[in-house]
Image (cartoon, rainbow, N blue to C red; front, side, top):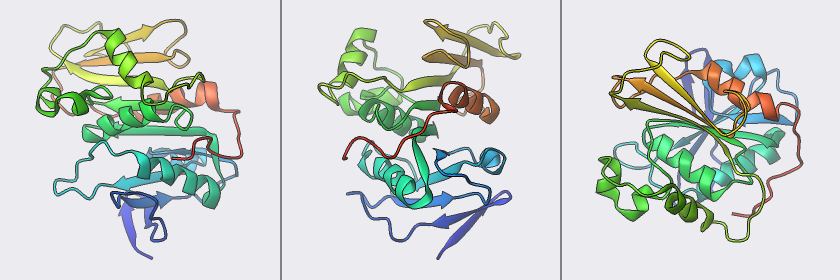
Length: 237
């Protein structure tokens, strides 16, 4: 076994996981107080408090950035459901920068696997595929209908619920100072910041790295999915 330590938690490298064409590494953290079926998520400081199984994909690229090959990461969820007693109906994803790009892809390609996502400083699902350089430089724009059609094309015939999204980006515009100074919160459609299908946060002048808010992530994930349970992931990816 190989281990890595982050804060007070110890990550374990999963050496028998190989279900991915790009050989993405898998690390996990399973708290001692876990009760199956347990939620699966990527927020380290909250793992023990909430009994959450964590999965940390490890990119094999030279710079440590993720590409948009999502199959291996979706298979890690299946591994966690089977090996750790994970709950396939409480599976969430969080990412920053290229990890946010990857999280958007996972939400778009596997809406039946990932119930909610929180992304920090990412680009839209499909953006990198259309024109990589223009995408990462923020120069690629499309209509909402066009982005939606692209996402829907990944899973033809799927009619189930879509992944709920919490999105954080930087901005130069004056903030509304909600929910805190320097931020503007936007709720799309019906609901509140914890129940809506899509919630956006723009942070003034923070640069590429928007500060993470794990407590808000947990609140967004937990409110609608706390009591859910399932025996397995539905798609065979």
